[in-house]
Image (tube, rainbow, N blue to C red):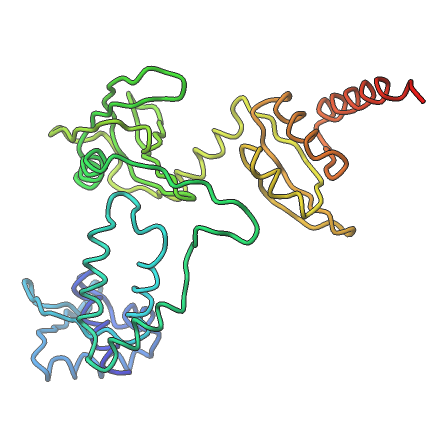
Length: 323
């Protein structure tokens, strides 16, 4: 609808500043001619859009222009309501803020669309607690006051003091430079640096936190997705053993429950799954695969195959001597 497009055009100019007609056309997925007609319509309606000529010209709004734009269409409202219904609503301590935002979304809808959108959102379920294929792990419990301090420090770009209980260690205070927050399968993590070195902290292990007034030493821009991938790769390659494994599909979840990580699953011609499984060490890999018996096979590395072969031979010798 044209009304939705006009609202989107104003929002683009408000959020990004000056934009060319071509850039607006690409964002709105319309022709440049349509954008020019929309600009004329906005000007006629009193929206202060002006054009700047020249190489770096384009269209912009007069500085300070603000207006309440609550013209959500039904699909936009449904998208927001569905996203807000997932189990990630408590991520980073923003559950109550999300609930308030969802109420405002519903209130912004035309009267005739409110009930329809709310009912439709109930037909979509995002990340339920029960999975057909696997057992979900319990969501981490994170201290609400600590989470508030961490969130404020991340957004403000300030240093952060953490009272952190690392695994098998006594809790202690440390000062870090926060970079961003990540949530994965109901577990939250703080990506930070400490004395210039990358650090990743599990939020459920933060006992207390304090935002400091000093600015954090961090880059102005960050690709959080790339940073998370790099840290995952370092974690999995450090003091861990990665094995190439074949497993029957019905035993896959048992393997997932014991391995540190499982990646790149593929289906073999016989219906078995071929995947990369990461374990803490050789002993952990041997133990995990031994639980699956003949429903799993380690294809590599050779030391793991040899260990399982020797163990199988010892068991066969133990029980093969009697009739």
